[in-house]
Image (cartoon, rainbow, N blue to C red):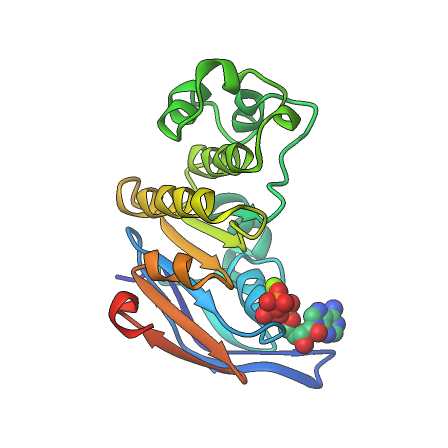
Length: 216
Ligand SMILES: Nc1ncnc2c1ncn2[C@@H]1O[C@H](COP(=O)(O)OP(=O)(O)OP(=O)(O)O)[C@@H](O)[C@H]1O
Ligand SMILES: [Mg+2]
């Protein structure tokens, strides 16, 4: 069964300017999805609806078969989703370990080490880490939260190609081994090729590619 599903999802700013209409997609745990599309096509808007940051003008979003507006968007944001951003959005006067502890009671060190930080790095101020290391901390924080859905808006946008590939691999592991549903918005075709499913958003419509390595 899908963990997250949209039904005829439509969004228009100020109720007049349509961004997209009648989007029907479903997302499963254990898979990584990439949303591609030209600037301004509505990728961030779609992600914000999936994460309960905003409401659609029409249509519904179901989490585990239940309309997220039933329990409320605040409940959905708190319990079901974690966000990863291009600029990491860590608390910058804290260490990685402290940042991870913000979302979880679990011990932060094993998870940070699993994502490639050393014990010393896990206790350093986050501003003294590279961008790639900071993004690992953001992923660790999302993983520690237990949220089944991880939403990432251009998570490799500030990183060089090799680091971007490493972060892509970690996000994929997060989906496959930790059984989360990872949904990434990106302009990077190489990151999209690492995904299990690619969704192309263009002119308000979505196209689904189940085999991006073959089709992109
Ligand atoms: N608050 C707002 N009021 C009116 N229009 C908006 C608002 N926010 C975004 N838009 C418009 O909605 C459209 C979709 O924006 P969105 O940010 O979702 O695009 P995007 O695909 O994420 O683009 P990018 O790849 O550049 O990040 C754009 O035309 C944008 O100008
Ligand atoms: Mg965007």
